[in-house]
Image 1: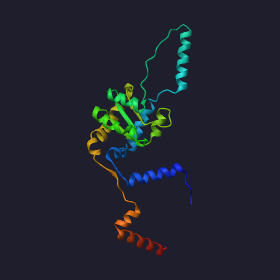
Image 2: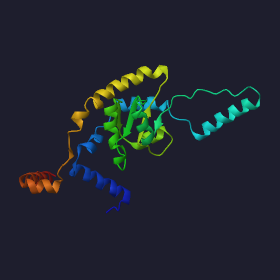
Image 3: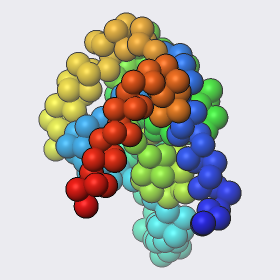
Image 4: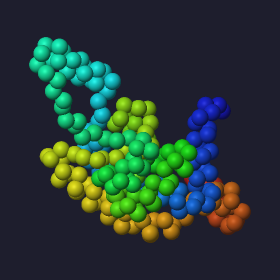
Length: 216
C-alpha cells in the first residue's frame, strides 16, 4: 500500500470526476487542445517574444544612464514587441482588437477565470487557441504559471509564420465555435457502474480472466 501525497490524490480524484460527471460545453471545450505539432510551432515563435527579465531591464537602464552621464544624450529606444500576459491585460487587448492571437491554458484553476474569454474572442473576431499546461505559458513570461498570453505585434520576418498559425487556429477554433459549444463532456461510467448496468459484460470479462489464468 502506498500512501500518495495529498496533491496527487486530489489530482486523480479530480480527473475521475471530470470523466464521470456530466461536464457542460462551456467547460468541456477546454479539452480541445492544440495538436503537438502546431503547439510546438506556436511555443517556438512565442519564445522569441519573451518579455525581458528584471536583470535585463536593470542592465538596459544602467547602460542608458551611463550614456546620458557621458554626455551622449538620452536616446529613447523603441519598445520591442513582446508577449502580453494575464487575464485582465489580454481581455483589454481583445476588447480593443489589438490582440493578433490569444493562447489560453487548458488547466486554469478556477476555470471561471478564463471561461468568458473564448466567447469574447469569438465575438470580437480575435483568433484564440487552447494549449496544454499553464506552466508552459508561465515559462514564456518568467512565472511559475500563466493563464493566458497574447501576441500584439511581431517582427517583419515572423509575420508569415504567425499568419500560417492564425489561419490554422482560426479554422480549428473560431470557425468551429458553434459546433464545439454544443458538445457535453464526461458522463463516462466507471467499471463498477458498468457492471451494474450490464452484468453480462462483467461476467464475460471475469470468464476471460479465468481462462487466461488457467492457461498460465
